[in-house]
Image (tube, rainbow, N blue to C red; front, side, top):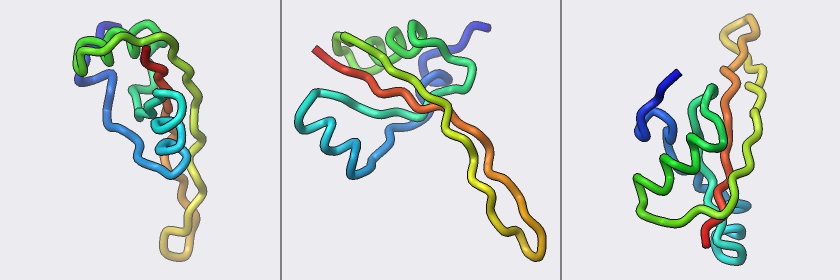
Length: 86
C-alpha cells in the first residue's frame, strides 16, 4: 500500500516523556498510520521536516476500554513511532 507523507505521519505526540527524549537524545514521537513501516516513517519524516533520521522505533498502542453510557466501548488501536535524529 502506497501512502503519502501526510498519510504516514498523523501528528506529533507531546508528552512529558517525549519532552525528555527531545531534550536529551534528539528523539521525537509521532502518531503514525497503523500500516506504515519503519522505512516509510523514516522517509516521511525526512521529507516533511528536512532532517536526517538515524533510527525509527515503532510500537502498537492498544486502545483503552472506556465506559460509553451504561455499556463498555474500546478506543481504536494506534501506532507510535519514536524517531532519532542526527
